[in-house]
Amino acid sequence: MTRIDRYILKLMLILFGFFALVLVAVYWLNRAVSLFEQLIADGQTALVVLEFTLLTLPLVISIVLPVAAFAATAYGTNRLSGESELVAMQSAGLSPWRMARPVLVFGMMVALMVSILVHAIVPMARARLADRQEQIAENVTAQFLKPGIFQYPAQGVTLFIRGITAQGEIEGLFLEDARDASSITSYSAEQALIVKSDAGPKLVMIRGMVQSLRSNDDAPRLSVTRFEDMTYDLASMVGGSAAKGRDLRDYGTARLLSPDAALLAATGQTAARARLEAHERLAQPLLSPVAAMLGFATLLVGGFSRFGVWRQVGWAIVALIFVQLLTNWTANRAGDDASYWPLVYLPSAVGAGICATLLWLSARRRRPGPLTASVEAA
Image 1 (tube, rainbow, N blue to C red):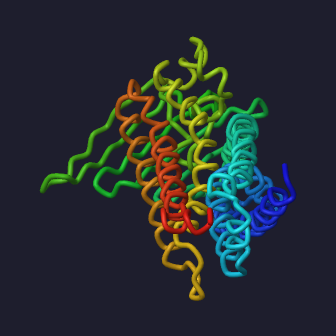
Image 2 (tube, rainbow, N blue to C red):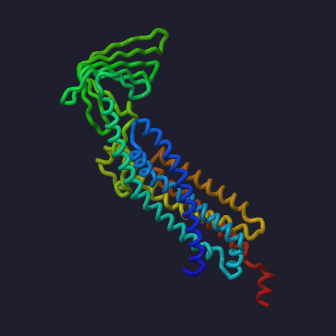
Image 3 (spheres, rainbow, N blue to C red):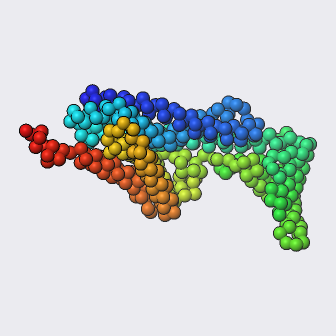
């Protein structure tokens, strides 16, 4: 790598670090505020909030890095053009293809960072986050086991427990679910137990009655059902539980490419859907060099101007938005039918084609014409 290559690469890396830091901070703070409100409302400590926000950080970084790479190359190229450094490089005989080499190296470095994130760090963070969510859901459920008082674990839900035995059995349970005003259901049971499951905590009621008041028609109707045992999903009452393994994004890429029966049973997904998730991860890092090259190649077409290259910056943003829209379309199309998984690689291919076309146009525009060539030969 020549001195010019190192100079351009160093400039892009410095700007990339700045833009990545700013964008990650903005996205992360936005996510942290929503998590803070949710967890503090559930009675969690500040340390739990900090842990959850840190576990969401790898996903935020993997999304932000390609955008930061585009911003770095666009701003860096604008700076090189404004200070006439691009003109000096072109006057020295460097073609657009040659000047794009350090930018491509920069884009591949960002792609490597994204690959490490999406294939290793993000699945590990999501699996850990699922474990902690399950533990917190169980802790929140345990907080409601207070006998002798009426409690309101969720909006529209009323709970009363007469007593708890030394073995942890609930005696005298009353539970009213009025979250749907048109269908109010009341549960009462002589005994109850809280049991763990892969989908979250369950309330098993023994020897009780269910009273349902439905007001969909003009005349409300009350139905009464007696039971010997009945199960109630506490996970929905306390906000859900993300049990480990229920989401394909909690697993590694290698396992998704060759899904086994245990993985499919835990997630409830098909093998084609698992492989689609793996291919989406493989395609995601490819957008980083495309974004970096778009920020460089589009601005290079404009040439030098005392008024800058802000018009080319606008076209570069339009090109990036087009690639992102194409990414969303292919993801939705493949999501509807997993057999269309090759479509996830289409945005990167189209973006690479746009970059190559722009570099070709830039090189062709700067190629000396016949008159210029004859004067130089003379």
